[in-house]
Image 1: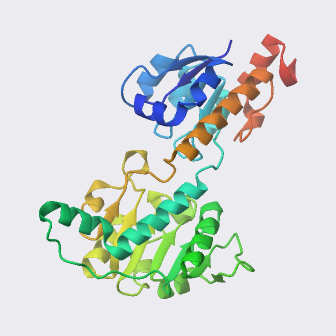
Image 2: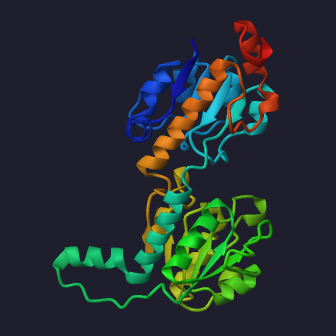
Image 3: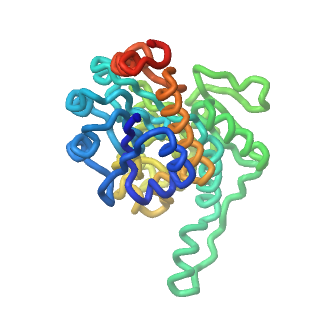
Length: 337
């Protein structure tokens, strides 16, 4: 029977695998993280050394040392979509299959973006904290979303879903994306500088890559109107945090809300999160029962495919799954039998 190692710590295991774990155990021998925290790479190698497949939480990196130290590892399955901390090139060179989860987080993440916008606009968190303190918090005037302009940078799955939510709220929605057109969807497409000049709320939802590193930098923030609010639920690398901090200090930014940043596990950077005018949540975008269950079940689907002798769905490097194909041949199953 295939042996699978789950890297999730106890808290994450309960959140993600309440329903999926029994289904996984029905098709494979499952070994779970023995510690009450995330494993470092050396601990992971020691704990999973005899396992055939690793199902990795998003906080678990997949570096070259892992693939080199585990000659029996067939596949590294990410129970998330982000594979930026996986060395796919090294995995491919070692013959290890990499696969990612389904994009089940779209609605959850878009809804959190809307929640953060409302929090910033109506001073929800700040007023709640103050009122809990002494019961005499001053009343803060807020901003109505209806009639305001939202600028969405990146018209992918989350961006397009969020755009529809914001239009229903009554906002004018601007979109910029060199790779996707919003034509016909009732939104206005423009270039990035124009979006920055016109938006009351700026929402960077571009993918993280070399060309989008520090997309929101001092030059970009120099284009926004004083008081503009910035909301980031995508990737921490999109923001030049020093420039964002300076823009908050100067009043160029009227507020910042973020669910991601440059701290471990893509969480907001604590120094920036503590600043006045900032609302920060610890990477909660996809953390709903619906999404967590769907991502866990997608890993069950992938293990089931491996056991059946087929390439799992959402495989990143299927042409380099040499170890997996050898395992199929040895067990006389699937495509290589």
